[in-house]
Image 1 (spheres, one colour):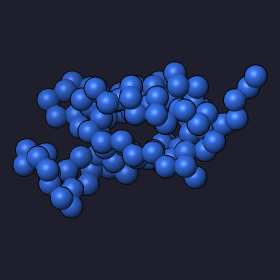
Image 2 (cartoon, one colour; image 1 turned 90 degrees about the horizontal axis):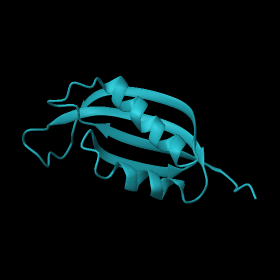
Image 3 (tube, one colour; image 1 turned 30 degrees about the vertical axis):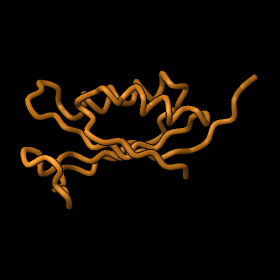
Image 4 (cartoon, rainbow, N blue to C red; image 1 turned 90 degrees about the vertical axis):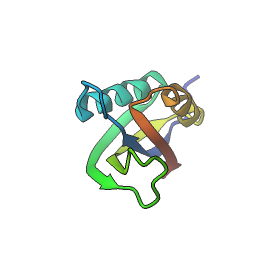
Length: 98
């Protein structure tokens, strides 16, 4: 049985301080996580570095924002968030259905 896929748009805040990986390499890793959760990436939009409105860490006042549109089964966003939870290169994750 083929599960029905829904369309999602995720916003990721990328933190590459002190890491040798570039932002593009981190984005490729996030896309691999999405495909491993039975998702299909349809679009990637790098919004560039932006300052935070509310700073929670004085050492991190801004980071790179990335929008990724993808299609996945209904349990896909939960799996993606769980897999990226311990990834220190991804500072925040927000997934919304579109």
